[in-house]
Every structure is written in C-alpha cells, then in structure tokens.
Image (cartoon, rainbow, N blue to C red; front, side, top):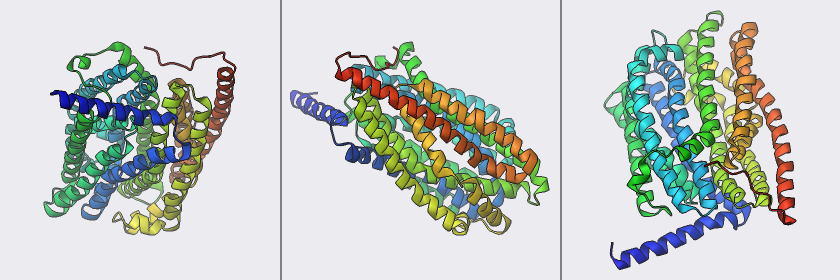
Length: 482
C-alpha cells in the first residue's frame, strides 16, 4: 500500500475509533435507539428466513410440510446454539476489549471466532449428515413427515459454515456500525424471499428449494461481513491470529455459555414438546401432523413477536459492555432502563396484532380447516403472557453484556430447567393437549419474578461500585479472565 493509501487508512481508523468511543459519551436514549433500531430492523428482516420458508411451504406443500418444519426446528436450534456460543461470546469479549482500548486483543478475538466457526461447522456437518434420520426421529418427525424434514435438513446442514460466519456481524455492531450490520442481515433475508419464490413456486423444488434459498442467501451475507473487517474495521486481520489461543477461546466460551445453554435447553424443550404432542394428541381429536403444523406456525409467530426485543437486547449489549468496561456504572443503569422502556413499546405492537387478528395471521401461512382452528386457539393461549416473560430475556442479556455470564447462565438455567421442563412434562399429564399449550405462559411468569429478584440485587451492586468510584476507592469492575 502506498503512502497516500496508508494515510487514508489511518484517518479512517481514527474516525472509526472516535465513533466507537461515542458509545461512552453520547446521550443515552438516542444512542440506544441508534444501535437498537438497525439491530431490530435487521433481525426482523432476518427472521423472514423462517417466516417466508413456512409461508411458501404451507401454501405449496401443506400440512405435512409445516409438520416437517416443526420437527426440524429443534435441529436448527441445536445448530444455532453452537453458532451463538461462538458469536455472542466473541461479541462480549470484543466489546470489552474495545472499551479498554485494546484493539490488538480485539483483532485476535475476531480471528479466533473464524477458526472456531470452521471447526464447529465441520463437526456438525459430519455428525448431522451421518445421523440425520435418527436425530429427526428424536426431534419429533414421524413416518409422514420424515422425508420432508430430511430433505430440508440435508441441505441446511451443508450451509452450516455460512450460517455460522454470518454471526460475526455482532462484532460489527460492537464497533457502533449497526447500520452496516443490519444491511448484511437485510440483504440475505430479501434475497431469501426472492429465491424461495424461484425455487419453490417456479422450479417446484419443494423442501430442498426452501433450504437452498436460505443457504445461498447466508453465503452472500458472509461475503458482506468479511468485507467490513477487511476495509472498514478498527482492527487488523492477521493470518497468525487464526492459530488457536486457549486463553481467548476460554473467555469466548465462558461468555457465550448463557445463550448456548438457552438454545440447547430450547432444543430440548421443543423436542419434549414435540414428543408430548405425539403422546397426547390421540385424545384431542386431531392428527399428529395437524397439531405439529399448528404449533410450528405459532412458534414462528412467537419468534416474530420476540424479534424486536432481541434487537433491542443486541443493541443494548455492546453499549452496556463498553460502559461497564469504562466503569461508567450510572450510565450502565440508565442504558438498561431505557432499553426496557423501548422494548415494551416495540413488543406490544406485534403482540396485539397477533392476538386481535389471530385468524388472519394463522391463515397467512396457508393454514386452513383444523390447522387454522387449532392454530388460533393455541396462539391466543400459548402466547398469552409473552410481554411479561420478555423481561427475563433482557435481564439475561444485561448480565452477559457486563461480563457476568455466570449470573446469566444461572438465570437461564432456572428459567428453562427449573420452571419450563417440569411444567412441560407435568401439565399434559393432567390436561392433555391444553397442558402443553399452557405450560409456556406459566413458566414464563415464574421466570420473570425470579429474574426481577436478581436485577434488584445487581442494581444495589452497581450503586455501591458507583459510590466507591466517586469516593476514590477505585474498586475495579469484574474482568473477563485471560
């Protein structure tokens, strides 16, 4: 690179670092909105992957295809669990490194993430393809939906490296470039819609068409993510940093353990739910495929409702991580409260639309007859208390963002293992299919109260840290071990 090129790069890096440092100085509400809205919009558009797949499958394949997607859901969630273990763990360590001004360490975190994604992808593809049908059987596929589920998952598995590498856009958001992060997600999602129409409607490729549309779209998103780190990032990529560094890997896994556990338990929860459906459907008057299809549509709608919350949480997390790393504890509290207020506004709108126009929403997926009737009944009960349960997700993201993954892990464990599993297993025994439907809202409310108790204690701790900083005692913030 010539002298002019080096000077231009230095100016760009200086400007990008100044932009990153604004995370600790700008007004809180505009800053939260500036980082959260692009994340939220990007996730809403990104959620169109599963949403559009189900719409096309429901309309062109029907009840069996929707049931197959429900059986594939635990499998795709399992893959996502390992993706988020690396991606979210890297994002937390990356944010804390930027907050300390350690750009060399941040560059190493980026490179280690690449290595871990590739290793994990190889293992998942190898074992997933080899044990595909036995795993789908465990996840709830039966003889009528097995072929459709296997056709879909065989292609999705091949695209695992691209699905994983797209998650490095969390690091783009950590640098304050949420707009570009959103663009990487939006581009892939819009392309997925176009390809779904081409592959399913025009070429009639069926389940594999939906899968190929997803894989190719994610590949384009990966190209965009890697371009950012080559041309615009504050860090430098070095080949030697791809070699495994156990200190960084330990920190990544430690900080990514909470969302990893959350998704692992979600995989188990949906597996148990699918098996409970198989066990208790015979007394409900519906076929297994009808119930699986109805629940699959409801789970997709739940994901859409929660998407704004996840976007706000992802926008909040680097803000809290940066300011916690900079010991600005009062600012951390204000950021969290602002995020809670914004989340309430953005979650209630899709929730209200889903409750009021339930029949139209379910029918949009091509559901009709018994699937439509059961879907409306299930959604208005299964999602009844979602706005209350949302708070627990924000609590968990707060602990993760402040470098306290142990607390986030504990909260997630209590939420999923102590509350969700017992209700999921016990209530159907007494109430049949209704027990499966009501297990989720009951466990969400119980989890919210437990999380609220933890956050009250955390706020007292922040007040103490702030007081000690002001009096000059200089008690350090919890650091991520090296």
